[in-house]
Each structure stands twice: as C-alpha cells, then as structure tokens.
Image (cartoon, rainbow, N blue to C red; front, side, top):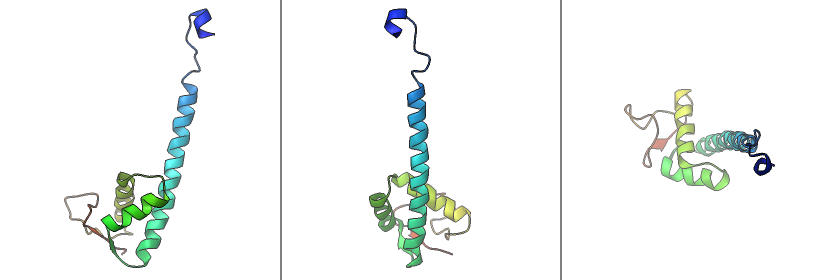
Length: 100
C-alpha cells in the first residue's frame, strides 16, 4: 500500500518497538533468575568470578556484562562483599565473590 500511495506506513516501526520491549522484558527476567542462581551458588561458599559467570551464562540468556552488573548491584545493596577493590565498580575474572 505504501508503494501505491507513495506515503510511508505510519505504524511500520511499531512491530520493532514491541519486539524491543519484549526483548528488554525478557532480559530483565533472565537477569532476575541469574541473580537468584548466583545467590544460590554463593550460599555454597565463595567463588571466583571467572568460575561463576560461565555457569550463569549456560542457564540464562544474558552476557558477562550482565553478570557484572548483577554483582555490582548485589555489592551496592550490601549482599556481596566488595572484594574487587575500591577503584572498580564491577568484578574482574580473578575477583572473589562472597556473601556478607
């Protein structure tokens, strides 16, 4: 129809916006589930970040940067100890993750 009338479809981008919102909601849900899984993992004792993130990525549709964000949030809210130094906000591979 757009070709016949030479006018753009005013709702063409609506599908893309809806899909983006659905993806954002899905990632937020996966991050919540990954956060719960990380807490469960750490209840068994401290572990290195490099040992934790692969387990979370295997079970949840997230990226390593999402796991770092989860750790930073848990540290900020007082759930995790801040073991990765005062100059960094997020953990690196060899940093220890430990519940308070």
